[in-house]
Image (spheres, rainbow over the protein chains, first blue to last red):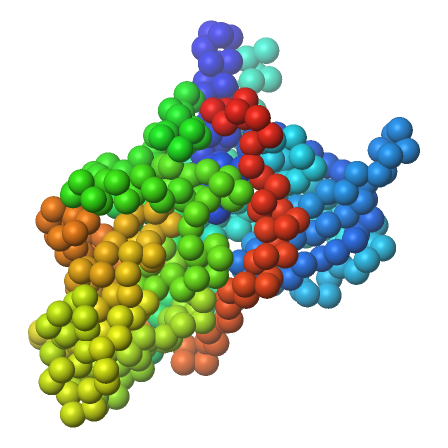
Amino acid sequence: MRHRLIAIFAAFASLVIVSIPLFAHHGAASFDTSKKLTVKGTVVEWFWANPHCFLRFDVKGEDGQTVQWVVETQSGPNITPLGYTKQIFKPGDEVTVTLTPVRNGKPLGRLLSVVLPNGKKLGVSAATAGEGRAEESQ
Amino acid sequence: MQERLVVPIGVLMAISVFSPLAHAQARLPGAVYDFDKKGEKPGPAPVRDISGVWEPASGVAGGIQGKGAAAMESCKRDPKTGKYAVDRNAPVTDTGYATPDCLKPDVEPPYTPLGRETVKAHIPVEGYRMVPDALTNDPILKCDPGGFPRINLHNFRTSEILQTPTHMVILYKFQHRYRQIWTDGRELPKDPENPAWGNSADALPPESRWWGYSVGKWVDDYTFTVQTNGFYDDRTWLDNAGLPQSDAMLVEETYHRVDADHLELSIKLTDPKIYTKPWTALDRLSLRLQSPHLEIQEMECSPSDQEHWNKFFGNQTGPTNGADKAK
């Protein structure tokens, strides 16, 4: 019985994981959707554009080295309903970003959520997450 | 132990069942969708009128077919469970990347040899053959015009149809574009590869177009059909999955006014260079009438913005070695 329950649990877990790319927006092949990372850093640039915005921020590692991360998300019209604006980030802001990393190991990812300096958390909707959109893409 | 497992299983079942619903109910602020009006009984369809602001009836993403025109129906959820098919060992496609088999079209378009050769040359970022952004040759990602019918087969968003005595105009949100559909009785260009309005007093010199030449007519009080030909060349794709088209293509749209609130859009393609026979690329996409005050957002594609995005993101997404390809 226990093994059957574990099997059922695994099946549903895999369903949730595997269903993710089905909604993925353009460039979904870039991402390792089985992973999720959370990093803290300092905003360098918030790029507001169609079809995709991105947030560039510096993350200082335990070794003292700074690595610059870039996370992309959807276009302005898609994410304004979620609270994002062109002015929401400014250089120097301290943010905590949760992301799906790319497969190639570079410090790149797709934005899943971000905590602003004032503590407010912005996410991405089921339709714009990339894990995510029903092809809410370019 | 059993009790401890029951809770997470229940949570996962709930996620798997309800997350598609959450997705389906994604909305544009100010818009009205069918899920807002459960149990409604719309009034009768107006006669010979498809004007107004239209939004996919099922939700903001209901008209977006990133999987590709022919594959739109292949990833449907089971209506009882809300689940997709699961493929834990997704196959590697001809582009070298693995994608869930669910994204594979149920029915492959009827390619000619040239059509098959052309689709293999297209490297898309969506659909069954998708690759990372760094490796694509999708013209739309350089902000080239997506053209028609890709505007409908890939990304039908908020659109407004304007009716005049001589033509209809469709204003599209995606890429901030418009089309003009003549209803003044003129005929389609006879030679789609050298197109012009030969029978019009206002005839212009021949010019091929990214958006084609369009004429429309009412076939009954509730059904408006449009034919389009005269396309520019084969640089435009049919959809985000890289399906090809040629300058010999004829597109037939059918707009059927179902009731006061709904319009259905279907698209049939005939392209003897690329496909051996006509096929239906869009089957009754349901659109819902919106308030005339609902604004069409701007989704302009700026080449300089795209270049900046590619510099810091898109161009960085390619494989550093072959190892990450077949994950």
